Length: 216
Ligand code: MLT
Image 1: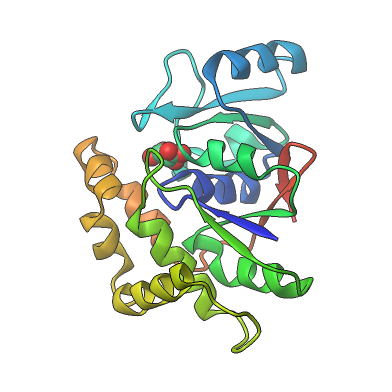
Image 2: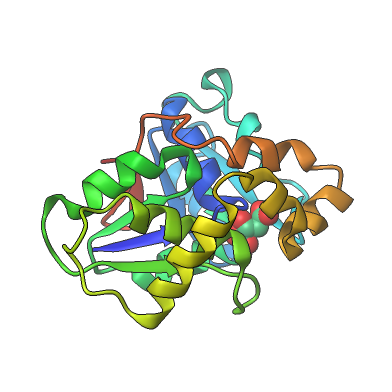
């Protein structure tokens, strides 16, 4: 089982979209492919969504802020999603049993991840192929919710667990201090950090199934 984590903001927004009744989310790597798919699937049933440099892509319907994904906007629609790091991680993981996780659904994702008693890979999307604090802390939070002794931890997992213990009392502060968090704040998107820091706010888990993220 692979759990893809992109707390700021792709997997948080995926949870919001699913909770709001979005039919499915198709992760795509580039903008032109998303536009081509919108033409193929039909413009009335799809929404072009995503970001580059944190900002909504010109001509797209929605950016990557969780609170944009309300039932009025997304219910019954297919969301074509292209983001800088998160969708890339989802595309890479395709073929495995893939779940999407974030703080907003942490406990449910953990419960779902252990259900099959298989090996677990926590795939932190990171930032431009580099380490990101918020995804690693989220991985640590997920580890803290797994039954003790069920898994043998890698060194990276041990570090993630320690980082979670260090930051669990102030996840919002941790995100504000993180590189991508600071960048989003500089774009005026501080509210997205508060939304992303709300542990277990949503009772929904995403699962990648034949190239589409649907409710697990
Ligand atoms: C990404 O996939 O790189 C992120 O979700 C970026 C963002 O929307 O802030």
